[in-house]
Image 1 (cartoon, one colour):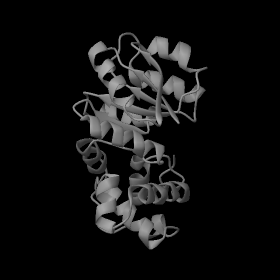
Image 2 (cartoon, rainbow, N blue to C red):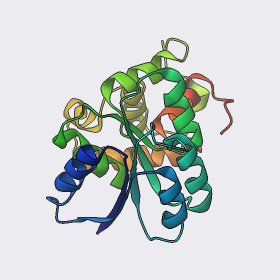
Image 3 (cartoon, rainbow, N blue to C red):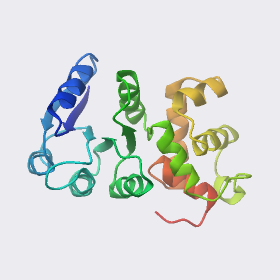
Image 4 (cartoon, one colour):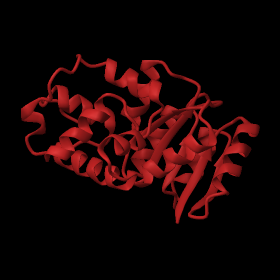
Amino acid sequence: MTRLAIVEDDNHLRALFVEWICTVPHLQLVAEYASAEDAIDKLSELPVDIVLMDINLPGKDGIECVRILKGARPETLFLMVTVYDDSQRIFQALAAGATGYLLKRAQRSELLAAIEELRSGGSPMSSSIARKVVQSFQPLSQPNVSATSTLSERERKVLELLAHGYAYKEIGEQMGITVPTVGTHVRHIYDKLHVNNRAQAVAKLRNPSAFF
Protein backbone atom coordinates (compact mmCIF):
# COMPACT_ATOMS: atom_id res chain seq x y z
CA MET A 1 0.00 0.00 0.00
CA THR A 2 1.32 3.43 -0.98
CA ARG A 3 0.30 6.26 1.34
CA LEU A 4 -0.34 9.67 -0.22
CA ALA A 5 -1.04 13.21 0.94
CA ILE A 6 -2.21 16.22 -1.06
CA VAL A 7 -1.27 19.86 -0.49
CA GLU A 8 -3.57 21.98 -2.69
CA ASP A 9 -5.56 25.11 -1.83
CA ASP A 10 -8.09 24.73 -4.67
CA ASN A 11 -10.92 22.81 -3.01
CA HIS A 12 -12.43 21.56 -6.27
CA LEU A 13 -9.11 20.32 -7.65
CA ARG A 14 -8.13 18.73 -4.34
CA ALA A 15 -11.44 16.87 -4.26
CA LEU A 16 -10.87 15.71 -7.84
CA PHE A 17 -7.41 14.34 -6.97
CA VAL A 18 -8.90 12.58 -3.94
CA GLU A 19 -11.53 10.98 -6.18
CA TRP A 20 -8.90 9.79 -8.67
CA ILE A 21 -6.61 8.35 -6.00
CA CYS A 22 -9.42 6.53 -4.25
CA THR A 23 -10.16 4.53 -7.42
CA VAL A 24 -6.80 2.71 -7.13
CA PRO A 25 -6.83 -0.14 -4.56
CA HIS A 26 -3.13 0.03 -3.66
CA LEU A 27 -3.16 3.81 -3.07
CA GLN A 28 -4.24 5.14 0.31
CA LEU A 29 -4.96 8.83 0.87
CA VAL A 30 -3.90 9.62 4.43
CA ALA A 31 -4.12 13.44 4.51
CA GLU A 32 -5.04 16.56 2.55
CA TYR A 33 -4.10 20.15 3.32
CA ALA A 34 -4.94 23.58 1.90
CA SER A 35 -1.75 25.31 3.03
CA ALA A 36 1.97 24.69 3.40
CA GLU A 37 1.80 25.64 7.07
CA ASP A 38 -0.72 22.89 7.86
CA ALA A 39 1.32 20.36 5.89
CA ILE A 40 4.57 21.30 7.64
CA ASP A 41 2.90 21.13 11.04
CA LYS A 42 1.26 17.73 10.54
CA LEU A 43 3.13 15.82 7.84
CA SER A 44 6.44 15.75 9.69
CA GLU A 45 4.99 13.09 12.01
CA LEU A 46 2.61 11.35 9.62
CA PRO A 47 3.74 8.20 7.73
CA VAL A 48 3.39 9.10 4.04
CA ASP A 49 5.21 7.86 0.94
CA ILE A 50 4.22 10.41 -1.72
CA VAL A 51 2.99 14.01 -1.48
CA LEU A 52 1.25 15.82 -4.34
CA MET A 53 2.31 19.45 -3.91
CA ASP A 54 0.94 22.65 -5.43
CA ILE A 55 3.32 25.64 -5.76
CA ASN A 56 0.98 28.63 -5.49
CA LEU A 57 -0.23 28.29 -1.91
CA PRO A 58 -1.31 30.95 0.60
CA GLY A 59 1.56 31.84 2.94
CA LYS A 60 4.61 29.68 2.24
CA ASP A 61 4.69 28.36 -1.31
CA GLY A 62 4.94 24.71 -2.26
CA ILE A 63 8.65 24.86 -3.10
CA GLU A 64 9.50 26.10 0.39
CA CYS A 65 7.15 23.49 1.83
CA VAL A 66 9.01 20.73 -0.03
CA ARG A 67 12.38 22.08 1.15
CA ILE A 68 11.28 22.01 4.79
CA LEU A 69 9.50 18.64 4.65
CA LYS A 70 12.27 16.96 2.66
CA GLY A 71 14.71 17.91 5.38
CA ALA A 72 12.44 16.34 8.00
CA ARG A 73 11.33 13.37 5.87
CA PRO A 74 14.06 12.55 3.32
CA GLU A 75 12.40 9.24 2.43
CA THR A 76 9.17 10.93 1.28
CA LEU A 77 8.73 11.62 -2.45
CA PHE A 78 7.25 14.90 -3.65
CA LEU A 79 5.41 15.35 -6.94
CA MET A 80 4.80 18.98 -7.89
CA VAL A 81 1.37 19.43 -9.53
CA THR A 82 1.18 23.03 -10.70
CA VAL A 83 0.24 25.47 -13.46
CA TYR A 84 3.77 26.87 -13.57
CA ASP A 85 5.98 25.68 -16.43
CA ASP A 86 8.80 28.26 -16.27
CA SER A 87 12.35 26.97 -15.94
CA GLN A 88 13.08 28.90 -12.75
CA ARG A 89 10.31 27.25 -10.72
CA ILE A 90 11.03 23.84 -12.25
CA PHE A 91 14.64 23.88 -11.11
CA GLN A 92 13.83 25.50 -7.78
CA ALA A 93 11.39 22.67 -7.09
CA LEU A 94 13.86 19.97 -8.11
CA ALA A 95 16.62 21.60 -6.06
CA ALA A 96 14.28 21.75 -3.05
CA GLY A 97 13.80 17.99 -3.22
CA ALA A 98 10.89 17.32 -5.60
CA THR A 99 11.20 14.05 -7.52
CA GLY A 100 8.63 14.81 -10.22
CA TYR A 101 6.90 17.77 -11.86
CA LEU A 102 3.45 17.56 -13.44
CA LEU A 103 1.28 20.30 -14.91
CA LYS A 104 -2.28 20.64 -13.62
CA ARG A 105 -3.72 20.14 -17.08
CA ALA A 106 -2.67 16.48 -16.75
CA GLN A 107 -5.51 14.01 -17.11
CA ARG A 108 -6.42 11.34 -14.55
CA SER A 109 -4.39 8.69 -16.39
CA GLU A 110 -1.30 10.93 -16.44
CA LEU A 111 -1.47 11.69 -12.73
CA LEU A 112 -1.94 8.05 -11.76
CA ALA A 113 0.86 7.02 -14.17
CA ALA A 114 3.14 9.62 -12.55
CA ILE A 115 2.38 8.18 -9.11
CA GLU A 116 3.18 4.68 -10.40
CA GLU A 117 6.43 5.97 -11.90
CA LEU A 118 7.39 7.44 -8.53
CA ARG A 119 6.61 4.10 -6.87
CA SER A 120 8.93 2.42 -9.40
CA GLY A 121 11.82 4.75 -8.60
CA GLY A 122 11.39 7.21 -11.46
CA SER A 123 11.06 10.96 -11.81
CA PRO A 124 7.87 11.66 -13.76
CA MET A 125 7.53 14.94 -15.64
CA SER A 126 5.06 16.37 -18.10
CA SER A 127 6.54 16.17 -21.61
CA SER A 128 6.91 19.95 -21.91
CA ILE A 129 8.71 20.07 -18.54
CA ALA A 130 11.11 17.29 -19.52
CA ARG A 131 11.94 19.20 -22.71
CA LYS A 132 12.74 22.34 -20.72
CA VAL A 133 15.05 20.33 -18.47
CA VAL A 134 16.81 18.87 -21.50
CA GLN A 135 17.07 22.24 -23.26
CA SER A 136 18.68 23.82 -20.22
CA PHE A 137 21.85 21.87 -20.89
CA GLN A 138 24.26 21.88 -23.81
CA PRO A 139 22.97 20.01 -26.86
CA LEU A 140 23.67 16.30 -26.56
CA SER A 141 25.57 14.80 -29.49
CA GLN A 142 27.17 11.58 -28.20
CA PRO A 143 26.92 10.10 -24.71
CA ASN A 144 29.85 11.12 -22.51
CA VAL A 145 31.88 7.92 -22.21
CA SER A 146 33.40 8.77 -18.85
CA ALA A 147 29.96 9.55 -17.40
CA THR A 148 28.36 6.34 -18.63
CA SER A 149 31.30 3.94 -18.42
CA THR A 150 29.74 2.10 -15.47
CA LEU A 151 26.40 1.65 -17.23
CA SER A 152 25.39 -1.38 -19.24
CA GLU A 153 24.49 -0.95 -22.90
CA ARG A 154 20.79 -1.11 -22.08
CA GLU A 155 21.15 1.37 -19.22
CA ARG A 156 22.95 3.81 -21.54
CA LYS A 157 20.09 3.51 -24.03
CA VAL A 158 17.53 4.20 -21.29
CA LEU A 159 19.53 7.23 -20.16
CA GLU A 160 19.73 8.60 -23.70
CA LEU A 161 15.95 8.32 -24.04
CA LEU A 162 15.44 9.95 -20.64
CA ALA A 163 17.70 12.78 -21.78
CA HIS A 164 15.46 13.35 -24.79
CA GLY A 165 12.37 13.67 -22.62
CA TYR A 166 10.74 10.27 -23.19
CA ALA A 167 8.31 8.96 -20.56
CA TYR A 168 8.73 5.46 -19.08
CA LYS A 169 5.94 4.05 -21.24
CA GLU A 170 7.54 5.46 -24.40
CA ILE A 171 10.96 4.09 -23.42
CA GLY A 172 9.42 0.67 -22.83
CA GLU A 173 7.74 0.73 -26.23
CA GLN A 174 10.96 1.74 -27.99
CA MET A 175 13.05 -0.89 -26.24
CA GLY A 176 10.46 -3.66 -26.08
CA ILE A 177 10.47 -3.88 -22.28
CA THR A 178 7.86 -3.33 -19.56
CA VAL A 179 7.44 -0.11 -17.59
CA PRO A 180 8.57 -1.79 -14.30
CA THR A 181 11.73 -2.98 -16.11
CA VAL A 182 12.37 0.58 -17.26
CA GLY A 183 12.00 1.68 -13.63
CA THR A 184 14.56 -0.93 -12.54
CA HIS A 185 17.05 0.30 -15.14
CA VAL A 186 16.50 3.89 -14.03
CA ARG A 187 17.15 3.02 -10.38
CA HIS A 188 20.41 1.32 -11.40
CA ILE A 189 21.38 4.37 -13.46
CA TYR A 190 20.74 6.70 -10.52
CA ASP A 191 22.74 4.46 -8.19
CA LYS A 192 25.71 4.20 -10.57
CA LEU A 193 25.77 7.93 -11.36
CA HIS A 194 25.10 8.89 -7.72
CA VAL A 195 22.09 11.06 -8.60
CA ASN A 196 18.51 11.29 -7.37
CA ASN A 197 16.38 12.29 -10.36
CA ARG A 198 16.15 12.62 -14.14
CA ALA A 199 17.47 16.20 -14.26
CA GLN A 200 20.61 15.24 -12.33
CA ALA A 201 21.17 12.13 -14.47
CA VAL A 202 20.95 14.20 -17.67
CA ALA A 203 23.33 16.77 -16.19
CA LYS A 204 25.76 13.99 -15.31
CA LEU A 205 25.55 12.67 -18.84
CA ARG A 206 26.60 16.02 -20.24
CA ASN A 207 29.02 16.96 -17.48
CA PRO A 208 30.53 13.94 -15.67
CA SER A 209 32.16 16.20 -13.08
CA ALA A 210 28.79 17.61 -11.97
CA PHE A 211 28.38 17.22 -8.23
CA PHE A 212 25.05 16.68 -6.45
